[in-house]
Structures are given as C-alpha cells and as structure tokens.
Image (cartoon, rainbow, N blue to C red):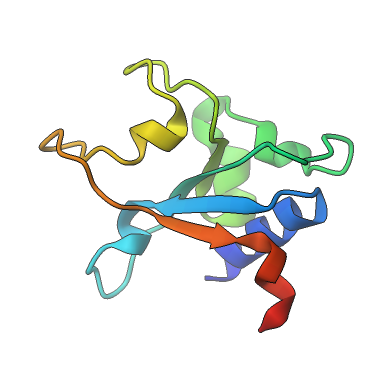
Length: 112
C-alpha cells in the first residue's frame, strides 16, 4: 500500500485526477504481490511529474524500486495488443474476457 500511495501522491501533485489499479492488488489474493495500473494524463503538468513515472525501460525497474508497482499513462498503447493501457487492463490475460479495474479519484486523496 505504501508504494501505491506514494505513486498516487506523486501523480496527484502533478495534477492527475484519475488513476486505475489492476493486477493482483485488485484480486481475491490475501497478500498481493504488486499492483499494475494506469493514469489519465488530463491536467497533468509534465514539469511537476516524477520522471520515474515516465521511465519504462529495463522492465520498469526504477518504478518498481521506488513505487513497488507499475503505472502507465492510460492513453499510451500497449505494444503487444495495440490497445491503450486503460483498455488492456480491462481484459483478462488468461481468458480474453472483460474484467473490472478500480478507478481512483485522486482529487479526494486528502480526504482521509
């Protein structure tokens, strides 16, 4: 949770309003291994965005080290499928069936 919260805080500080979470984090697993997700680029100020959130080389090692998971801009295309990451994360990789993901309103992060 700490890594995800840190990533969401960094996105929020850059103006991001919505992030989507996927991966084992949103399954019935009692202890998820990590999280995957994507974020809406609308209203994001790239000068305030942590560059690690835009570093995708080397297996996203920098993101995994700093935030313990992976986040992609939602409108970016996932190369193997040609779908945007927002679309890609809503497809079950084993069955090809549609699945749900969790949308987070980052404007409410300070409301806890």
